Image (tube, rainbow, N blue to C red; front, top):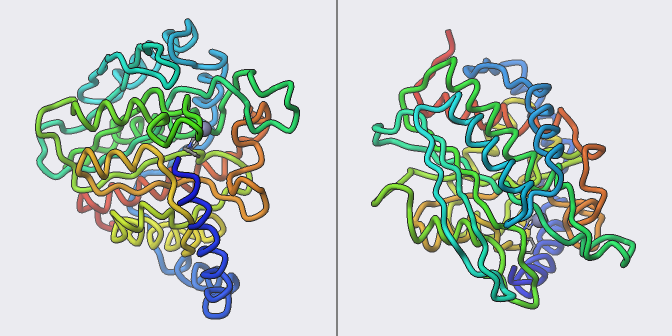
Length: 336
Ligand code: 1BN
Ligand code: ZN
């Protein structure tokens, strides 16, 4: 990540919030949401948060899914198999990328497509690999231990698997691509922002189909924990503001104003940065932000505490149902 930019962004963000707080109090946001909830009729099938929760657990059961490890290989096979049961087409894009320490990493991006021939397409993506070092853990003795990454990997994949399950049973007429990027989380700030997001950089330079385009993309990162707050991340604003507005407005209509806030945050060099800049697809990042922690991420971020104990079905539901509603509306679903 470009840490400087990130923190400069947050200084600006703090200023912005104080202004914003005067004009758009939280109470007003939730009042609006209550009104909307009464009037709003959902068009998408119900996202099952138990099934998403179980998919988080299944991934965590493999242990840390670190590139070049047996657990990573086994989990990659498992995820591809699961998506193959649900999607019209699954492509396992294998490649070799260089880590910041010079080692080659065997990576696999998994692309599950619905209606692969449709020209109007939406991309939903996340990363599935896990960080090899808990370098934000309160205990320095844990800094070289791998994390289970229930939130920072498994939650996004689980939401996408549940979306895939519903797309199989209630058809849409647009194309939907669900991409699990590999090798997102090996980076270190001292090695530059490019040391992160190796799988999405690879995919953005070598699309799974030549000339692949989607109308827009939505990246999920840490979308399963208690007390998750999602704000407008800086690169999402820069490259895809109309998409942010569409998704946030949809979340509020569904009654999820406790999760989605119309507040601008700093810029994070996450997978969406490369999908925007190298891949040419306007893409937002739904990423857990924290007002209270020093890192501005959730307190369990890159610590050994990122395990099943932080996972909240309600958060998975808020994100998953919002995405489903966006997808089914794009497909022209109408209230019956
Ligand atoms: C998000 C979760 N990221 C990694 N794990 C992206 C990121 C990159 C966050 C650099 C901070 C710095
Ligand atoms: Zn991470």
